[in-house]
Length: 551
Image 1: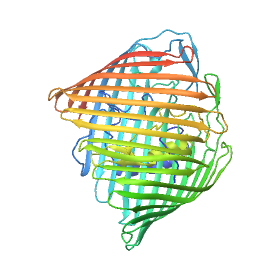
Image 2 (image 1 turned 90 degrees about the horizontal axis):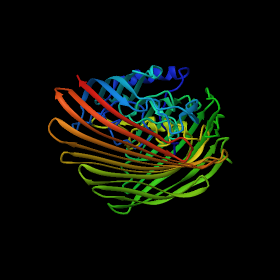
Image 3 (image 1 turned 30 degrees about the horizontal axis):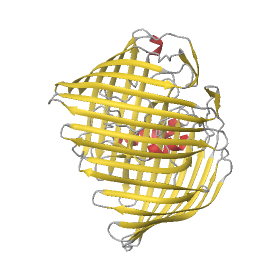
Image 4 (image 1 turned 60 degrees about the horizontal axis):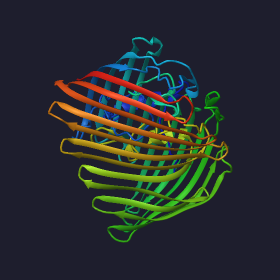
């Protein structure tokens, strides 16, 4: 059972080689990452770390993409803000390596920001390849605070290319984006990129897979993945993973099984960041290589068309120096699967990592255009592995959008940010997620809820983050659309010291179609963060006026 993972962009040394291999391959099958941020302005920029994305710029079209489709656009925006430097109530939040340390007295500074964002989106869905790529460089110029001027490029891409029909395929994925480091640090109302409490997250994966059918008895696969991730606020990491599996064929009518062997090695010996302190607490920065070996047999026996018995057993070893003790022993699960015409639910009782827990994964189609998804699982992982797993799970929807492991793709999976406090240490991750998406007549609604508890065994860290995201869009007329979004993040750090943060991020906006491919937007954004840490409350109001031209 592979570790969870995420996205990144950090140093340029070892990453250059792998990026040079992945990006051209991804370009062959490129795509349109339409629904990245559901804010009215809709460009790929840094945002508060709400990982349940329910907002987006250009809406994903309902029509299925066939063949090669290329789209380009350019956006010009003027942002008026009353807090350009995200000054907190106690003053400017001082940082070390992008991490909050303390506050120094400083007044708020209003500013007008000009942002230019061209974008290229490519989708290729054919018999041999299925892929997508979006590239969006962004230039921000400040009228007053010129030292905040910056240029960033966001990239999301994935491609599955069939080299040998029914036998050999190669999957490549890449993600480069500006992301919030920790929800306890500086945040912005309009999701703009800053040099404080943000890092450029890079992640690249290459996964060739060989498949061999043994008539109707079984299908065998051998996959080898090489992945790299970096951000500058965590140690660079390289992951190598080999998986051999044998899955039942059509001869097995009621009993479906899958036997697998997996070996995973994560090397954190790359450049590590300097010492980091958050509110007086040192974040562990020592590197911690991981080695995991797993052998498992997973089975599903259908009792009838609706109910099935789920079971699995195997053996696993997990070595990481930041664990209290290396994990080694049997793993098992027993559960029930329910499948209906509009619903699917798997519920299992698990024994793993020397403990017991319940996991679930399901979905329900309330109508053809309204769907509910839910999941809960526990794992031992690292922040770097989560980044790699998130990007390695990238896939393209029939409409040309991006999903990862069955959920809307977001570069950071944890609402607490790239490094919410665990550093490079392995941690026990308990994560539950619920998403609801739907369309009613002229209305589009989405809602997401996520809870994520991270606990380390030897570095004394524990934090629970709850994130809520809701968006609403209504077509007022044939040329006018109203958009609203609400994000809430609650970070409750229990160890090593107690800190409680509540962040609210709300936006309201209108989009008006001026002509063919030309849209004007106006968006008001409000950010309010209340923290138990003295002087770290943040308030910001921002008004964004923009023009977007699609070519």
